[in-house]
Image: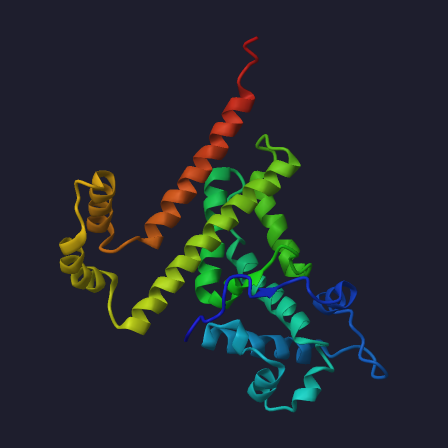
Length: 267
């Protein structure tokens, strides 16, 4: 598996909005043949997800490759999905269904716990499906699973004192954090596979050469902090630590914002 694609190398919302929404909500009609067979359409999407998961790279997903996985002719796929762009939208929405299931027992009586669960569901989703990180979702797929996921996540923040816009902004902050750290974790694992060296082995090989050219007195803060981090992580960084540390700081920031808002006016 390669994860060769770049961040944002694909984009949701690039297809025809009306046609895409009809596909995602199952209202697409096959010309002259009555309603589109939903089961077959779902099989196309499931096959595309399997290809993307196996390759860990969305660029490997083509209509031809998906048709081969299903054992049908490429042109037959266009009966159910008008284009690769719309197929990607359907793949995203179908995958979000996993997060919806993951959030079934979401804590809505404790927003801190609930927000931690929201982040964890997305974290697991990205690690299962790293190709999702190649899609820029500034225009999210407006399918039933995407909206159901958003509804559940917002429920965690409902009634805690945030405005509607702030509720949306908090979710954006959490998901941006999760996406960024998940990407680092996946890329680190791929680097280890490509080089055949763990981070600890790489640093062990690099340290003697760096010592020949690096003067700690010239960069005292970098030397001190770098040594402490390296000893802690056994590498340049630890995505798991970054995930938990960053999420906790985000939650503390939201709590501080709420506390400040709830303080009595001292004027």
